[in-house]
Length: 314
Image (cartoon, rainbow, N blue to C red; front, side):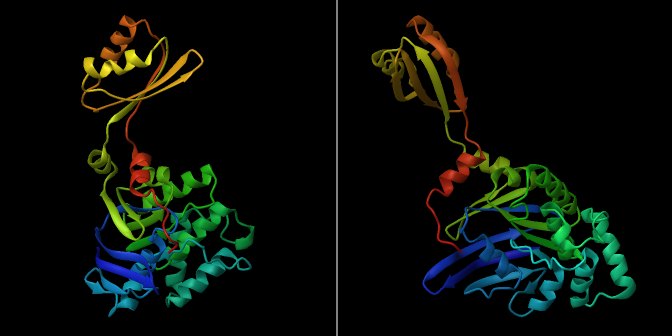
């Protein structure tokens, strides 16, 4: 378990992370979501002990990040955004080198190598040079390097950046399988990937936590009204505005006239669907309905609403 309390990091006068707090539980895959420069990487580096916090507390399995840094790093496998591979080495040589840093030798290394090769699907490339491997395989090699010591916690910074759609699916499936036995904390700015992979989402914006919950919880907490876009012929501005009196639960938002077409937009509560009433009103007023397209709040809307302003790179 990871417990972060009032964690901050300043670079001179720049506040990259501003007194954030959250808990991560064993057996979870948690997505750390934010725009570029929101503070994701800075936070991950503090949790892994690579950056010293300006203030605040990090506890990992009751160990303190200040006093027990090396013990904590034994528990963590960390894949940074810039995958630190040595292209001239063969895959098994690179993994052997990293294992030796962690005092894993001989039979222990052979067992560890067999485990990560199986888990990460590296059987076909283990004797190749790293430089000869595809981007997807290089990410797998980075994951294997992070897992060579069989850590209980995996921290992954933008693990699918630069991958093609097929490679993204492969890495997603791998992360989901790893999440069955490890705590996985992964950062990303790719909404679809986070939503498809994780159990819980934490959103950071300009160094502050602005949301924390499952996808369903975030949708429930931030669910706004439904926006209904209609394309019609024959609607006048007066007849459209008259809807407000006839259907008080519907808020008329805009009308855009283009030749003989009118683009209408309405807003209403998701619990009070007025489309049938709007349809009947349109027929009564001799509108010709060409399109009626409702749009409910989704994770992308929530993310945009919470992170509209650009943040300073951190």
